[in-house]
View 1: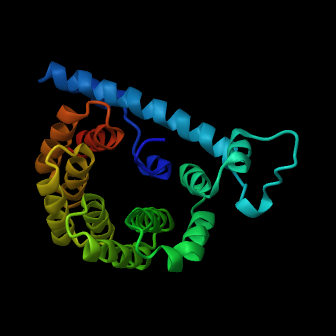
View 2: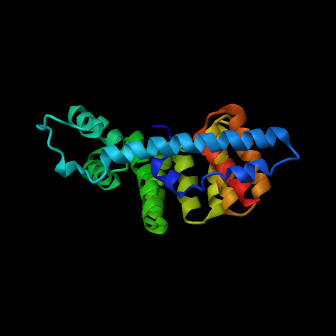
Amino acid sequence: MQEFCLENIKNLIAFDEVKCNEIEEDIDLKKDCLKYKEEITAYEKELAEYEKQSKGITKAEINCQDEEKTPFTAAFCEADSTEKQNILYDFNQFDDLLAYYEDLYEGKKQDVQFLNSYALTLVQKGSLEMQEKVYGQKALALADEVLAMESKNAEALYIRGYANEIQENYAEALSAYDQALEINSENALVISQKGHAYRLMGEYEKAKEYFQQALAIDPDLPHALLNLGNVFLSE
């Protein structure tokens, strides 16, 4: 899957085609609106398929000796330890994934990639469970561990921004995103996430500006496409 959590799609407002058709003053904007509606529909179908494959299955319940396996169980049984973590993430099995991270943490405290993955899973779990402050604080601590080793680690700065954002610490979030963009000004996901922070703050024009900037770099970035659509609906 792409770099965003599939579960977030559930929280997105699907486009109302009537609203798109109400846009008359700007033909290009109207076309974009309808295009984003198609994008949302496609990702909703993909989400439904993933949920169908993984619904109700946890790591402990997987029997790799079964002759008939879903794509989820087949991929999991054939994967090594690192791949299992990726599969659990893709299929939203956050409880099992966090259990993996907790078991491995003591031996991987110097592994920045591991710490970043652990932190990102925590913020996704926090958003899913509506426990942003609990999981966000843990994610911030892990991001800070990475930044203590590598002060210019762009992914850790992005996670720091994301963790602050879900806790509604928007000034801290924007500061972290800006620091990440100083390292790579063309990071479309960070630019889009900055737009998301502005959208949550109710600053829709600024949000739209950043989503469009991200799409100029990556026209197919789901995060920007979906959130720009939400801006249209909020206006």
